[in-house]
Length: 115
Image 1: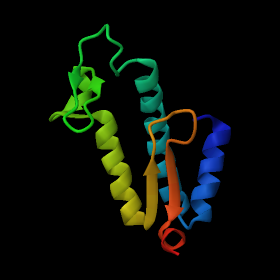
Image 2: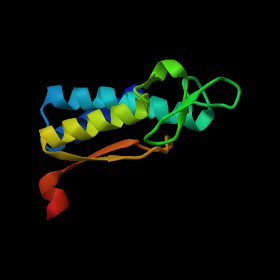
Image 3: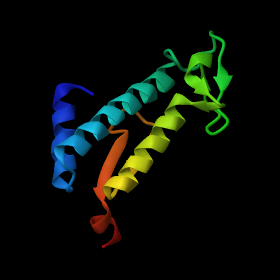
Image 4: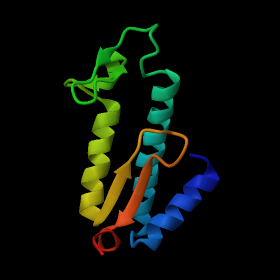
């Protein structure tokens, strides 16, 4: 996530009612999610590229290096669970996508989603 995308994300997050602290926390998690999505698509570390030894996640069946698997769950799945939990606590809905060509984390207000 470059500087311009980060600023756009922060503005959009505050527009749906998040304060600056919550918006910045989401931006940090979204940047990590985007980095992991790119690594998964490109076969970069820590994801599987067919050349390094990996373990497979019990949740998503994606391959990652052993240091990024904790109790059978990969870093991406743990991060997605944290994002969803924090979104619920903040009163927003998080839409997570694995395609790094666009936004991998999209936030919407719960009121707008139910109306």
